[in-house]
Image (cartoon, rainbow, N blue to C red; front, top):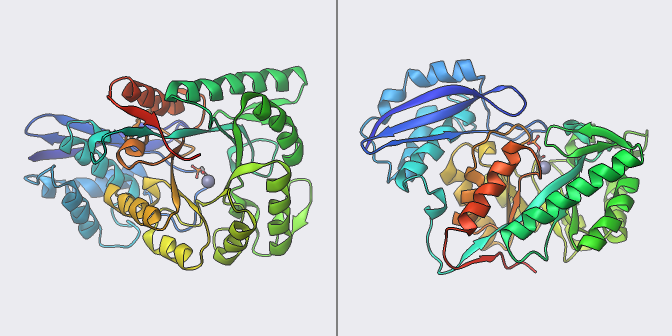
Length: 391
Ligand code: PGA
Ligand code: ZN
């Protein structure tokens, strides 16, 4: 039984305040903290300023006393009811999610990966690692993230090792060639190369290491309502951007294409998906982990992949529903960190609980490694483990 719920202001990896929830039950104390985005989608649930959010929450927190943590989905429903809005603008999606996860943790004695236990074998997600960055996260390119997928890995440690080794090699080579600017907010390298030069550079390394290459374009960030504006002055119309993405995806054999178009272009995504069969065309800002937007994407046959970021929607059970509907419609879920992270590792557990085949959580930096190390810990403590079946 829940005795009390408290919120504590803590810092995220960008040095901004976020919330940690502490749920006190008759057994123990369970906690969870939540991340924040930088290149956020305009349809995300609203996160409030931490001071305001904590003050508001303190006026309602006694309502949780006496609730049963094992009925964590009911607690989520209750959180939505007391907020009373579609987008959590009253209590804040950051608060809603922190409480939701801490309560869910209480229901499984902290082992969030046990939230759903339906299968004899436990499958682990392939890590999608941000190697070179740009866009709103900082870096030379207009596109936001160049991503590695170590698809040959037979274990999670081999997968993580592959991404880390490539990260070291890429950093050294960029430094040697005097192309290195530094590291961005997700600890991806920032370099002086443009988009295509970055792809040429990475393609060679990916071939040697047998990893697949992906991109999060975060295209809404360089769309002004009329054209896609590239850093070096290039301007592309909707149609030209689609043609360019198809050309680049084929030339550089990109397996993973996240937000290649702006966040309202459901039809454009459909054209791309048809042109790029056998590759993942993924919506992040397009969907914002929102069930209504996912349904629109299904109707338009927009994508075959969806990013799952629970803080875009507000509670765990809402994110769970999105994953379920995506799977029913053969849309691959990819669970993801945010650029401003905490050391909390719940996305790792959720990837296992919800059988999600990819986890996007960066490569280096303690706030990224905490998720990867959690997966390694679980690989070594759960019997009957294997990598996700995607290839
Ligand atoms: P964000 O970016 O966390 O800054 O929103 C990550 C992404 O776009 O995938
Ligand atoms: Zn994204």
